[in-house]
Length: 424
Image (cartoon, rainbow, N blue to C red; front, side, top):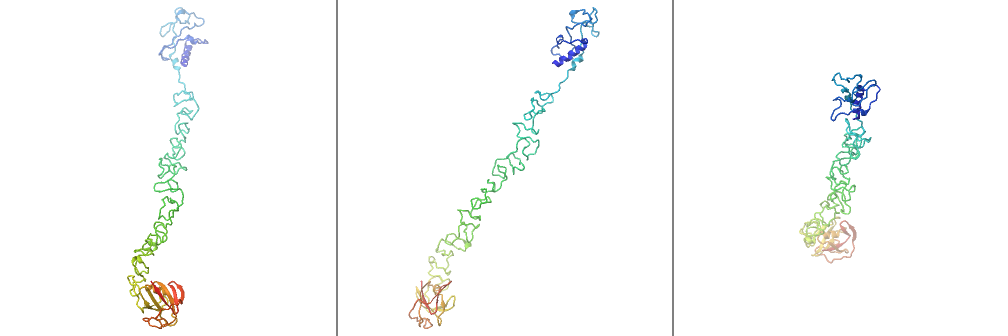
């Protein structure tokens, strides 16, 4: 208001004041209420008379400059005693430029907080702080790098990049799926799911973060089990990745008699011992297989299905006929049956001279009398002994314990002039 007042005072001075006179603020009236400067003339009161002149009407408040008695008359209006102010003088009021930092938001400014602090809501340039202006607004922004790159440490919302924001921070995160599910393809630590990271991802049965295949979780993140080829300590005896001759399908060591049939080990059956259906060697019961199985009703089993050799094709004992003969299974030397009953059989060598070697027990077994009892004797004319007597008239049995000549894979060997007796 003072600026406006000074302008029209200057105008009055120009029009109504003589050169060199001082103006007094108190000598002028103010504008009428609700009057716009420059729209009406201003009337001065209480002015002084110019030097050398006489105010003809001192009470009219108008100075006469011409010294006459008729008063001053305005040539335009015909009024006397009134000095008109140039209307253009009031129009000298000008707009003051905005000043950033004066605490007042003026035209052209977005804000003006009267300080030079850039980290609040108003910059020192009187521009409102925004994300992307490269200045971190305290309490509002974590960062401000003024770019739209979501893979650096500051995302476009001026928040610091963190795991879970949905953006993969280059060089820091392996993935970022923006969720809190820890067992999907991207963990809550923003690491890509992988076997060995300690988190059971989809497709994994376990994850113990080690490569030890002897514990409950394999290095492939699958739960250890029998048949996986890895022996689980304290749980499995063996693991061949399935049944093999050394390991049963249940990961126990294979053995005939363990009640577990292991076909790859040659077992036809395994009942934990001999039964009517299974021989003690884990083969199916069969008369003539050479394995005596009393539980299956076999009274003998000479390994063949022949009748007339002391053990019938039904594995029942036969009384061997006297004078039945044969040859040693290895040396081929001849022998002959001198006497036989249900429980005993007497056999003599039947070759000239010293007689040669005989696998006595094997010959008896083949005839259905498995046990070698007595052997020996001296040369005499008895049942082929030294080829002296006929087989159907054997004479007395004479065993002196001589003739033992060792053993081989077929059993005890008797030699020279010898005879022997076997029993059931």
